[in-house]
Each structure stands twice: as structure tokens, then as C-alpha cells.
Length: 104
Image (cartoon, rainbow, N blue to C red; front, side):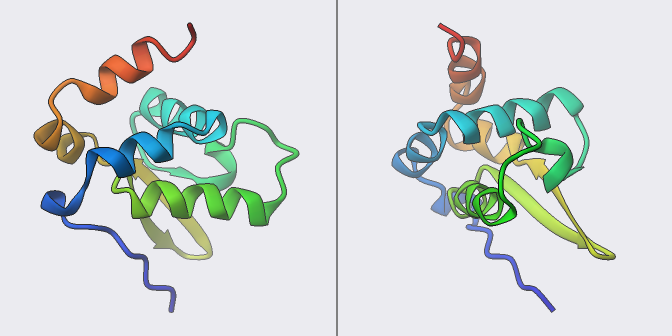
């Protein structure tokens, strides 16, 4: 069984969050997850349908290890949700500010 690594809230670092969101593809994934407001599969949250699965898996791993998303397994599907409450508890308003200015 796959064991996902999720840092504890207090272990989420500003540098890790910013580094993970510095990649435009990962930023788009987080935006898609937040817009949905619910858990999404990796494929459903992917901004481009042509992304190789290995690349997509790497993006989700980076987001997970930075503490930005929580991944659970439901059957054969990996379900992802943004850890918005944890991010806002550590860095109030950061995620909202980044997403607000992401398209500039």
C-alpha cells in the first residue's frame, strides 16, 4: 500500500511553499484544486491532458512534500485537496495573495 508523506502543520516552511508554487504547472494544479473546492484525482486536476503521468506524479509529490496538498487513496485513484487551513494557519493570506497575482 502506498504511504504518502505529509508534513505536520508546524513543519510547513515558507521556502518550501514558495519553491513548490514557483513552477507554473504546480501553481495551475493548486488553482484547479481550490476552484473545485473538493478532492480531485491527479488526472482531473492536471492543467494539461498531455502531461506524462511520471511528470504529473512528480508535481503532486512536490506539492505534497511542501505541505500544500493532502493525497489520499480511494480505490485505484489518488485524491488530492489543498491544505488551505494549514497554509493559512502558518502563513495567513499567503496562498490567496499568490493566487490573486499569479496571472500578472
